Image 1 (spheres, rainbow, N blue to C red):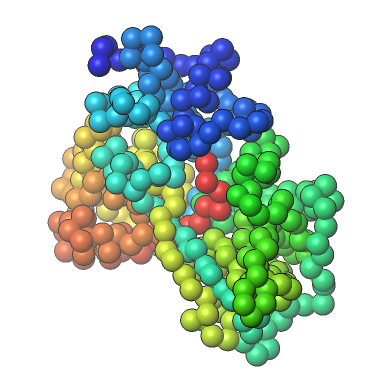
Image 2: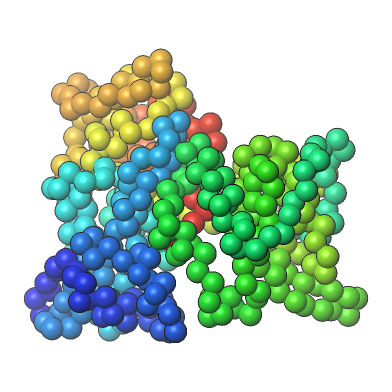
Length: 404
């Protein structure tokens, strides 16, 4: 490898960047994929790495907001399009790109928190990213009954066209997203990217279908399938959003009673109401997977962005080799309202924690006590671990319904 150079993209780099990262993710360039990519195109936030004259790596940030525990939507760096060209891997290009991206955020005073979805879970820990949220891939057979007395309300779930659905869908999402930890802001471009629906993306299934309820909506695809005993169609949920328990029950009942379907598959949060709606929870087969990986770019600015579940006064000894400005001792004080202040201190530390593990706990879904049980967090002052763990926990499991 010759001297690696990194620069910010310009408008002229659009097709070169697209042509690099799609094959890296084993995708081919299909008709209008360039139009899809325009919805994620922020050239001033895209880094390009060249080996001589050859483009070999990309790493981008989308300007987005994410809901933090009890704090609503807050700016964060949505890291995406991280790709290294085949033949140039494991030679330091990714490390240099991550270094340039995180150091750039710090030096420019941009978003204090970064997050990404990892194509391979073993990659990003060395750059300070911690696994902060998970989700369930649920498989439910058609017709599963609800518990007796479940209220599905009197309002019908209506199957409507995309055009008719979108005003209700976007309004419902904007109503719910600020209350759900891990959910993202969506402007018009983000919606267009999320609901991209060319035949190439359907993998043999139907176009996206839209069903609406006064308190929610569901977006899904169907796929015809017949077995020896009759219909075994597949229904794959892209997103189910409900603002009320009745709305959630009505939407799930709509899916579970769908004609010619054998099984429903859906991504759901760890605390989705479906588990407590059905009479037999074993019928909801769940496979747990990692979702958001979080990085605290500037720990002092990041920790004060969210709210906490209990008062706290503790000192962290933080290790952070990749972003050394975070290293050292930080005193964190949380008042009775859940608001935190974070300042440098020379006081003896109560807890020893790496930035990766503090990031894992940041969205409130990972217990510091669990990390301590694995030897990843150390209690230096007896009795300080449990109060810190309780303070970081959120009232709901973080869930990000959208891969970016």
